[in-house]
Every structure is written in structure tokens, then in C-alpha cells.
Length: 176
Image 1 (cartoon, rainbow, N blue to C red):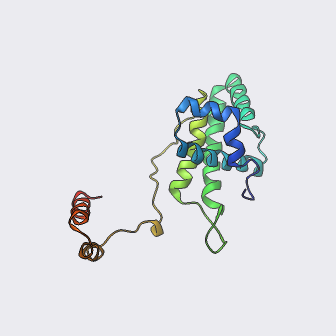
Image 2: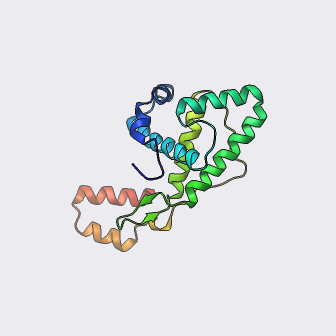
Image 3: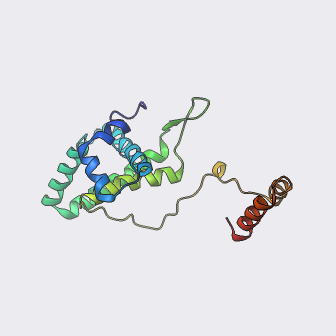
């Protein structure tokens, strides 16, 4: 378990509210694991910021439903700000250790997927989460953007059999 997460992904997977979420969205196993990690990050954020919105999935749902009953517009403003702050927290705070055991920041697409997990949780329980304002495109990190050059493809074709050559050339001409 990571230092910033009190409720880890395994505990989240065992939670009854989370199991209900999986049933509602018909989640695949890989999605369950990825979303559980996202929810674990969210609860880490809630604890670190000392937010009083609940420390369990049940607590968050109760809080959200109560806020919606009191004032829907206030809830929409609150959750929009909360998710923006959560996204900023994910983007700016080192979360994972690299091979050299040094903390590094999460990739932009990982941040987007993590926020998406929280939105999915709320939406699965019919709790309205507004869309973010403005148009923001998630960018791939430069170190994750390894493109094949013609030289690399030529080198691969030298050692490939006929079938592999056909696959490689088809992929290259189709833009894969």
C-alpha cells in the first residue's frame, strides 16, 4: 500500500458499495482494478485535504445525496470544484515510484482515467456530476511517445518471415 492511501485498492474491491458499482456498470476485471486504484487515490486525496465528505464509498454517497437534497446547484458547484482540485492534486503531487525508487508524477492519461473513475462511481449511483468547462485534450508524455521510424521498420523486415512482413507492412500503411 502506498503512503498516501489509507484505504487500498484491495479493500475497495471488497466494499459492498463498490461491488454494486461494478454490477451497475458491468465492469470487466481490468476496469475493476483500474477504477479501484482511482477510488483509492480519491480517498487519499480526501484524507490529505481533510475533507468532510466521507472516508468510505458509503459515506461519500450519503454526503452527496444529502447535499443534492439541500441544494442541487450548490452540489454541482462543490463536486465540480472538488474534481478539479483532485485532478490538480493528482497532476502535481508525486504518486508512484520509478525503478530507481524515486517518486514521479502520474502521466496525464492516468490522471484523466483516475478522475473518470470517480465520475463513473457517482454516475453509477445517479449522482449528477457536471462536465468540465472548456476543452482540454489529454496529452501523451514525451517519454511514452515512441514512434517507429522507417529505419526501425526496415530493420524489423530484414529478420521477419513472409507472414510477419505482411503484418508489419499492413500496420505501417494503415497508420497503426
